[in-house]
Length: 199
Ligand SMILES: Cc1cc2nc3c(=O)[nH]c(=O)nc-3n(C[C@H](O)[C@H](O)[C@H](O)COP(=O)(O)O)c2cc1C
Image 1 (cartoon, protein in one colour):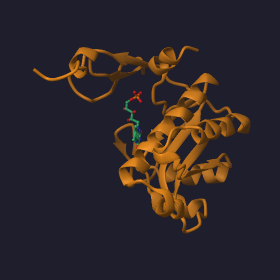
Image 2 (cartoon, helix red, strand yellow):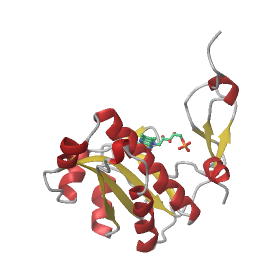
Image 3 (spheres, protein in one colour):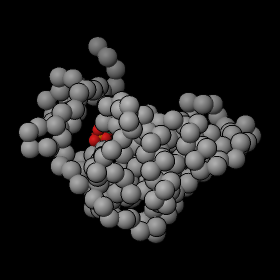
Image 4 (tube, helix red, strand yellow):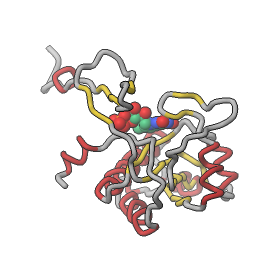
């Protein structure tokens, strides 16, 4: 798969088949994250793969924002839920020792996560990056030692939804049509790209 095609094809997936993802694929994603660029090569991130059924339910319950929807009172009851998660941690001891500021820490996390997303996609696995999560609760679920801060969550599974890109951009709002297809608007290239300097 060409890199650009992968970038075009990638969409945030939130509906998944009831089919497990091999641990080897999840491990390969983390390996790709390991190789991502990081400020001063600081490599502050560590990862927890969650694929145990009981823990999956607990992690799902700690997601507070799902596709723009706030967690309902009774919790989530999706039929097509993720079959695995990768939790991205910041090693605070390493951050203190080698960190280059919080903004770089989070830039690094973004890059590591995109590596995981693209490697998963290559294996036919869909993903959704999530920060609308109860980080403290996730830390408790995985029994994270004090030196770790939960930074983000990657939900994974085999996609079971159709998503199309829209190039006409009026708002950031995504929508689902009567056939269940999710539409994701993106800004046009000519609206965001400038050359050399502003007039
Ligand atoms: C930093 C970050 C945080 C996100 N947090 C959430 C989240 O908490 N819940 C969710 O459902 N989607 C989340 N997303 C996915 C975005 O909603 C999604 O990327 C956006 O709607 C564009 O869709 P696309 O990824 O298909 O291009 C997040 C994405 C990023 C990059």
